[in-house]
Length: 306
Image 1 (cartoon, one colour):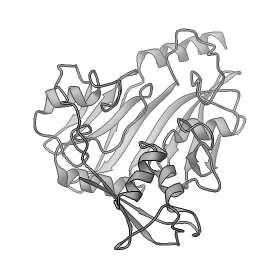
Image 2 (tube, rainbow, N blue to C red; image 1 turned 180 degrees about the vertical axis):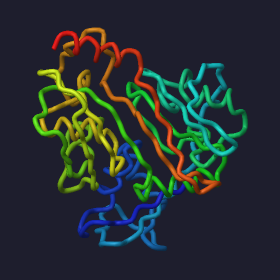
Image 3 (cartoon, rainbow, N blue to C red; image 1 turned 60 degrees about the vertical axis):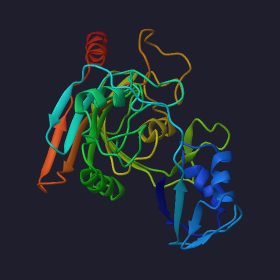
Image 4 (tube, rainbow, N blue to C red; image 1 turned 90 degrees about the vertical axis):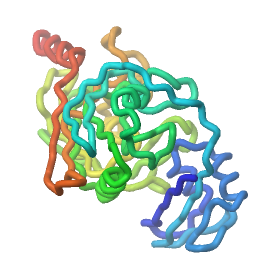
């Protein structure tokens, strides 16, 4: 059984089933309601009903029962390792690779590759399906990803994520000419009110989300930017840039339905820099993942044409 905890950081009054549906993006609304009905959701020490109204600073404890999961097979898939020691591993994830197994993706994932590379040396906190995985990036996002080899490292790094103290810089190519050299987008992100597969700016039920961006190069119809994350919400950069009318090139979910570069697969987003406090030494450690070839070629093409 896995435990997830949430602390209410906004004014109260929201129903607990609605709050958890927005927060637990990996689970359906019906599954969240079943957890509540079966007594797996507590506020303080008391089980509550779906219509329970939350109050500021309350702590919700959700028990997620162990599922009958398929055996995840170790696969000899090459990994681009940026750094490795006995506690942690930084991987440069390629485009098109799913981070952890899920329905329809039980092989070829980063977890399959990690199980072959690390053997039994992966933290078990997130269960069979997500061993060692502290955070994730989208399938078509490339770059730095942190993996934990033991539970102590996992707990310490999860705390850094919760406190927003991990240093994260992404590089992206967006539509349009961003006129200002830098800026900050401070807009809460939550589940899209209609399309549950999408996220959106959600002032009523969203969680705080802050993205700082800086222009690196301008190409007239496109702008190459660096984004520093102060928070880490699902699809944060994609949603935030789309909200200021500069969606990511290749992002068919939040941007134009037709990509101007036919051979491009998914959004042009790369996790460039990842910096943490090492869980054992207590020293700052930073890795930088080089831009993938497709991104470099696209930039070179834009430089030649501009």
